[in-house]
Image (tube, rainbow, N blue to C red; front, side, top):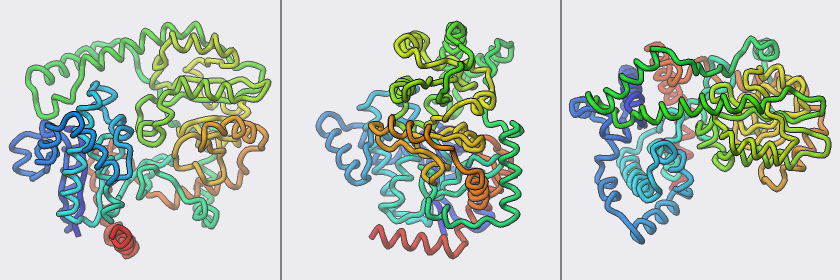
Length: 470
């Protein structure tokens, strides 16, 4: 039994090495593939035998491709994967944050795809595991699992606090037939009822405001990042971008100050509530990339409203100032039916007042269900497609979907409790490794992976995948 572990960036490399050690103590062999050679020292590479994709011959060869030869290489990989590669690499931080052009990202994508395919074909692991993220190394590794008949283990933080769900697909979608056939136990119903009550009374908090204050510790941390990036240069330093972080921080502060004059309270007209998402989060970059331009989505929603309704929008408390003031001001002038709320207003003070809630796939939509509101979704989520939400598949249908949602009474209370119980059964206790890197949580992840691999059902599923791939 062998598993392939994927990581990208220095922090993940160190974390996955800890998981690898924990798996080894449980008798499970593993191979670790990370993206950047600069994320580990020569000694670490020798001791851990980690494969850095940048050092693989396929990646070295791909970096020499250009012109028509590069275009043909991309086309061959797209046909083999059944993916639009440009769509995939646009979610990688090197594309949207570091400004790498399409030609460079195309070379990286071709090299990664070829190298990962060769590693997986040679290794034939039982499964592939990696954390959530839009990195090319992970997304291409995940995409290769199905055609090669390898199981994907994707432990994802579900909307139930302190619980994670094992998915075989990064789109994290549930099966409606499975949900409709689900029969909760009394204990599951009791948990679900208490959880729904906790959400309604704000005892469960999903979002917290970002601290934008200027404190001495911020300047100390900035100086430390500068030293690491340009002076001491430890492994992973090339992925640090202190000047970029500083630029975003001060731009956000300036934009937040400029937007204050546009804030308005909730009006007297009926309204649809759209809470703005965190930009470039994997919830959008991976699961709903077509809606990455939220300004366009906001206007799309506004023009889809029936007569007499407003659209109330509120910036995410962690990214106040993320919307460009000039474009937002122009949009508000062009669409007077859009009302910008003060981002410090708690969502639970708005949701009970709205006629419906529209979201891409945020936890605000999950909360909207618990308040009995019709919820309109645009992207993949753990609560979409189960019959409780109004899901937009084709943007052309948005006006009718909005009308249908506004004409409904919202989800039945019993169905909402069943949803919480359903997700409870599908999940296990745990926290994302991005949140909790403690030894206890690392051991828990290793135990969860080991237990799944030892289950007969998992082994049978892997055999079915392999048979399908052949």
